[in-house]
Each structure stands twice: as C-alpha cells, then as structure tokens.
Amino acid sequence: MRKIRIGSRESRLAVIQARIVESAIRARHPEIETEIVTMKTTGDRILDRTLDQIGGKGLFVKELDAALLEGRVDITVHSSKDLPMETDPRLPLVAFSPRQDPRDVLVLPAGCGELLPGKPIGSASLRRTLQLQALFPGVEIAPVRGNVQTRLQKLDRGDYAALVLAAAGLERLGLTDRISRRFSVSEILPAAGQGILAVQSRAGADTAFLREFHDAGAAACIAAERAFVRALDGGCSSPVAAHAVLEGETLRLTGFYVNAAGAWLKDSAAGAAGTAEALGAELAERMRREHP
Image (cartoon, rainbow, N blue to C red):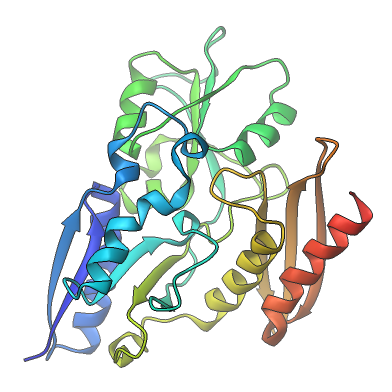
C-alpha cells in the first residue's frame, strides 16, 4: 500500500487544513495510506515581533520545505496567503482547494456587541492596517501575533477592542459564531490567496492522487493574485494585495498597493482566465506607471 506523509504546521488550524486534504485523498484513493506529520516553524516560535521584523512569511514554510526536500514528508499543506510569492522550483505548488470565503472579518471580545473605546484593533498585517484606518478613523490599530486561539485569548482578556482575521480560518476552526462583521472586499481587499489551501510537493513527484482535490478556478485566481503581488515586490508584510473572481471564462482582478508617496491605491482589470499570470503582472505595471 502506498503511503503519503502530509507535512503541516502544528497549530490547530494548520492540522485541520491538512486533514481537509487528507480526507479528500482518502475519499478518492482508499488504497493510499496517509499520515500527518506536524512541526513547529520559526514563524510560530517568534511571537514578540512583527513578521517584517523577523524575515517574512518564508519563516512559516522553512521547516516544511526542508522536510519535503529531505524526503521526510511527501506533500505539505499551506494557507495560500501565508506562502512567499517566490517558491523554490524544486518544490512546486501542485494543487489548490476551492476557495472559501476570502473576506476579512471583525471579531469582538466575547459578550461584546460593539467596539470598546480606548482599546486598539488588532491586525497582523500592514495591508489590513491601512484599510482599517480608513474604515475606523481615529482608532488605534496595533500589531497582534500568534495562532488564532492565542489571538482570541488576548482579545477576550481585554488587550484589544477587536481583531481582524480571515473568515476562512475561523470557519475551518468552527468559530463562525465569533464573527461580528464580514468586511466586503471593497472595504478590505484580501491578501493574495486568502481562503485557498495550497499543496506543495517535490518536482517530478507523482501527485495524481490530488487530481480530484485540485480546483482549476482557484488556481487561475491565485495565479493572477500572486503575479500581481510578485510584480510589485510584495512580501508577507508589504502593503500589496490582490483578489480575483472568476466569472465564466473571464477573470476580474483587483489590486492594492502603496506608491512611493505613501498613498494606497486600488485598481482593477479583466481578462481571459487562461492569461491569469499575465493579467496580474499587467495590472501591477499599469498601477505602478499611473501612480508612481
């Protein structure tokens, strides 16, 4: 019997996401044995500084990439929004899940129905922070690190007036009841890949067992989004974001970035789904040219 070892960060959400992929494999390929192998990443260990201070999103995949390259696991599962924009050619992204709700949401302290005055809103990214400042003028936006449960503990003990988190993560954790408000994508443009799971493997490996799991529409959207961010050199905490929607064979992409003058801007473009990467790169170049 063939065995597939699935690498995952050890947080509860990461393991749930690995199990989503595991369940999809087992449902279609009962002849394959699976095992989830968890590990703590550097990004999970360092919680007293923001990501841009410690090296970016690559710190969440470093140990998982090493496990893949060394043959200790066969595939790894990631939240697409946590992946660096540049991936090792030896470790291609081989499958993407259908997209869950891509929106960001507001989470209030347990038992509260409104923002508490005098407390900051917790945000883990500059992308969110800039857009929140427009939505909540005069309210302090403060950094927050840790897994979802850790952040919720900080919120409920009174450190924050609210948190802004990804809807998909809360839904996968069974914490939908904590959502107080879902921001529209026009209010807060999501991070590239938000709501989509990505599966990574070694170049040349047989990953046919993921064929039924893979969603071509999500793959087209994420190709456009990542190309946009990559073209603007957007890393984990760079204020660059993109969100694509597939309408039939047409892909509509909206991008967000901060220009040299410090102003943040949004713009959109549409094109054939088959030209997703080119569409992302072209929108980025147009925005950089028109809003230097």
